[in-house]
Image (tube, helix red, strand yellow):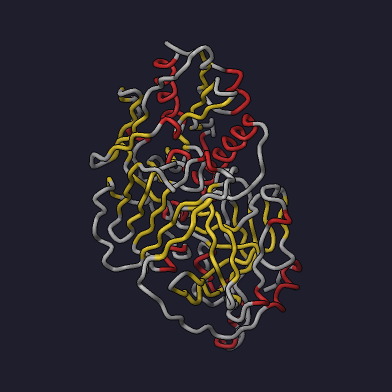
Length: 465
């Protein structure tokens, strides 16, 4: 196999020594989940417009995964970012190097910026000088993934070693040094590419050897690494052997403040007990379709009804359930900021808000054009605002009543509020995939649990801290 010239200087950084199995602990691990310091938006309109655009780009990616072409309990801090994501810090290597990652339940690959040659285009958040790279040469446990390694197939769809590992077919396969082909992964708003490694993930109370991780040499609009928490084999929960994980997302009011909540990684076998304080709903069955492997990565839930101000919104049932072609249904996605809805879902919801709210407040259509959000309402002349409650009702009877701050954002010196959900006329070729993508903005101050062992999603409203 011919290797792209951009990767050649990279190969000398590694040793091909075998990795040792590390000891583990069944003690739950907690990691801070944070909003880190990023670009400061002096113009709130600009910030909301940017978040709206990235939410739509994310929906475009999730609904069309064929556009992506990838060639014990613990806690960690979880931090919120002004560009819409939440980050965690993970340590890889021997000795360990700590890197910041965006936590993403809508993807299943873990990668970090890698080597001093790492280049990121259009990465103004944070600035290039603030990007922390991993240096494989400084780790005694770093190893490039070989072409015949089964983990190579975790990255590349429809990977056939007989076709892709031609050099190994003409020599002793046990001594073959051909590497796993470089990967290129497309996200909604950017891309990244690099070489697959196996490395030691060093968590409190536990080390995971031979952890598949991407060493990205270049990215576009993806400044930080991404930790995929989806359902795929390469995801962090799968490689870690988690029975469940949970987190509590800080309010967006703490963006860039350095404050964090906790991401809890639970690998204990007795994790089948319900938390009595949570409402549980079963995960829905993932659609299995040729060429759309990503649909198997998402966390589908059975949203059955949306109510505005106590009134049920009339939504065609076909958008609430996933059909045999993978169209319809609802997923939970920490990588999306604002909730996305297909137009036939979004428009009735918006119409109901307009019908109820314009009896008191006027539309602010000029702000709608500036932010990309709708509807927006002008609160000028009112000392207080009363807006309709938004409620999601799920299969099994669980209900999620959203706090006002989770679906309306105040802009314009407290004079205007805008609904923080998005849609787009994506065209017939882009209407596949889930109809509703529940984003992180709507999950602020909710403790959520992904119970992988029992295939259920739990949630409760609380103040995250």
